[in-house]
Amino acid sequence: MMKMTGKAFAKKMFGAKYERLPRTLLMDVILFWGLYIAGFQVQIAASVRILMISAFTAGVMWQALSSKDNAVELKHMLMLPQHHRKFVFSYVAALGAYTVLTKTGLLLAILLAVSAWKPIEITGMAISMVHAVLMAAAAYSLRKYWYEGGIWTAAIVSAILFLGNRSWFGLLLLANSFIAILILWKAGGYAFYQGESEKSHAIKQRKRGSLWRYFFRYLSCHRNYLVNTAVMWCVALVIPYFLREMTGLFVAPVGFAILSLNTPICILLSCDRDLEQAVRFLPGQKGCFCIPYCLFIFSCNMAADVIFLLSWQIQNGGVTALMIAGAVFFALQSAVLSVLLEWFYPIRGWKIESDLWHHPRKYVVPVVMLLLAGGTCVWPVLLYVVLVLLVVEIAILLFICRRHPE
Image (cartoon, rainbow, N blue to C red; front, top):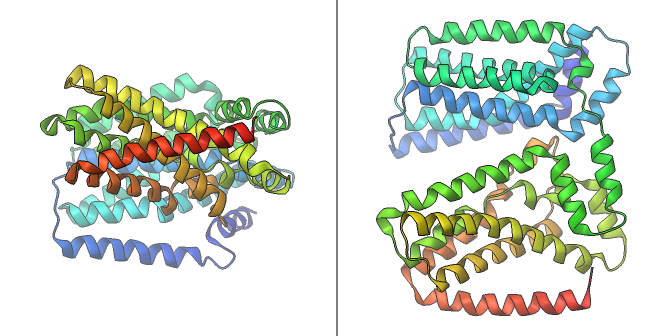
């Protein structure tokens, strides 16, 4: 039973014939070799390397466990007669293999290519990946007791930062992994099942009332989206510190471009197939949905840009009207491009929601924004062209909003 359960979930995430796995491993090898022959080297302490691998692996594992699509599959599997312990470990093993091989493998390839390491350190990194998978699964099964999970996580992060460079630190991770295994041993399959009541309630609310109400209800039902937005706000606070040496008007657009990398709010149609079907099926929905959606993304981007400008004023001073106008343009342009991508090129064929978060398409809009920001740094006259485009886009949006009132 354990083998059959693990095989069922593995086929779901790697493909019927595991065809996704060879492609991913080949990509890891190409990425490693490309960076290695480039000769770019960075000194990374062992504790920092372990923390990066552990945090990334645990984060992706948590996303996989929280996936709405996985909840449907898990619900069907739990209806079958099964041994709880075998089911739990087969489920965790399948999601852990997906996390390590398809996601953490890319990070590991980058770290091994750009930093100096010893063969024994490979063992330590492997232990940290397995430890992160087990700890994330154990903490997820105890998510009702979130304060205990928070204390446990804080203790492990502190141990990695202060003791991660010690040669015996791997033994500490193994001991903590054993604790996680004991927690999973007592957990049942339903500890990983997340009911759909809240999410279905949010979906029903979109049938009536304001789309803005739906957007905020959707965020309230997906707390990880709110966490990602809060992280972007923290980034907005610290970016002016790193740009201090290049203080000036034409450096600010680089910060605005970086803050456009808020993936979750830009994949609303891709991650909600029911919503996309409804929007595309009903007549006149292109303007009725896309305009509020564009304004919603713009408001989220603008909130981060406002925090960036306030932080800039406190740390560096000299915020001008042109910088404010630049923030409005980059926030609006990023929102427009994100909505166009979602409408014309939605992401298809994804297995779980984590695939959406890490899809290469997420970098298209930020890269375009960075290129535009770099152009304004080299040719300041482009800033005035940008302002003209801003006025034109606002006029078009106002005209469309009058034709499609919500």
